[in-house]
Length: 100
Image (cartoon, rainbow, N blue to C red; front, side, top):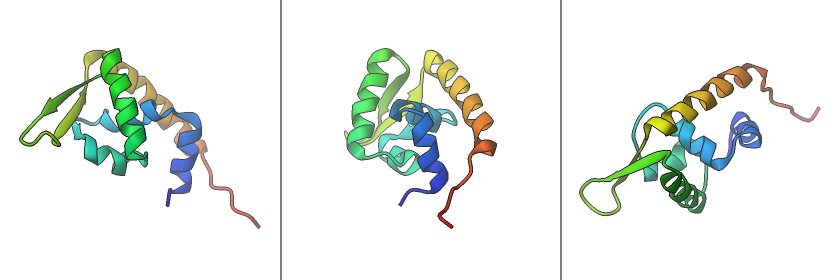
């Protein structure tokens, strides 16, 4: 189940944005992105392909073919830094609305 703040983030950021934000702190295995972003496996693979083609991320394989690691390119890092600033700006303003 998604945390309320995560649900709010998904209203503001696209799926690709959430992946770039997840990679902001460093390289991650694709399998770890599901846990970090809350996105489905299908959404992750669809968006990773778009981010690779756009030159925002690059991949590295290690060991078995399933071990795919992603990291930001310099272009992706610039975009992720802007997204991070936006994320930090809106976090204090997000609040959880609960029925009374």
